[in-house]
Image (cartoon, rainbow, N blue to C red; front, side, top):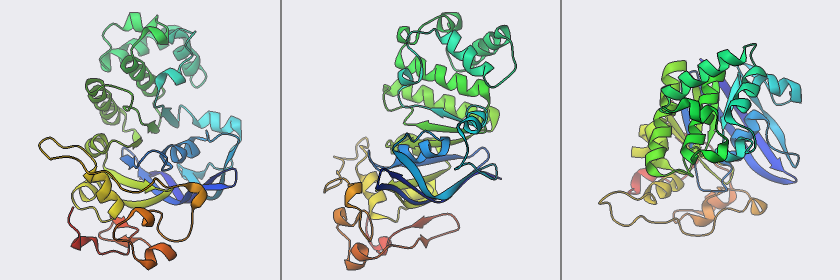
Length: 318
């Protein structure tokens, strides 16, 4: 059953179009990974879902349906009712999420009580149980700490714990492991997977780390220049990519005993220079005249796997 549906979503900052006709559906308990280079529109996508775009950004067209209800025109109060209980967000840098001069305990209590009628004592018991579940064995110390007294990984786990306590239907995770070392990255990934297992929570995971996404996600969307270039089951995307940009991303990932990774040539996409045709055409060695002049239609390879590309990628080796 679908819990979130994006239909032809277009988002602009001032007069610059960033997201261009994004379509995405997320089922209950499903993890969708969104990958792409920095500046491709990934964070804008999830911020538009939770209503955190900022004053200079706006949804130009399209719909965002959460549990069947279009939420693009909600008031601030109506959005507050959905945030936390319905949709929760885990930010890239947890220290930007927490107030540095207030103890973790006060921030958790304030957040939980803004959504649920529950006593402070009950919140503490639930928090300590959740901390333990997430591997924070010294829960009392964490509960009584300020954010700056905890490591980045511990703060990230506290942020995940807070999301778990709210029991949202959907979590938006914006590069949740990018600022962490490899060991802590693995811990955070396992904890998000536990959350899906325990609560049947749906997750949209935004990352430039294809390794993390390929491990966690059920399906993967590849975004470039504010366009979804390819989408499908993770095994199709990783093992049988169809779009040149997807193949370029995979080639750029370091692999043990796999030789030197190959970077993507050319300059990153500039939204102010958007024009007709494929957004990746200027960097694509296979681009033809039609790629540069005409917008591409999705080419389906099975029920869920499609790509925006005119090139027969079957003839091009990975």
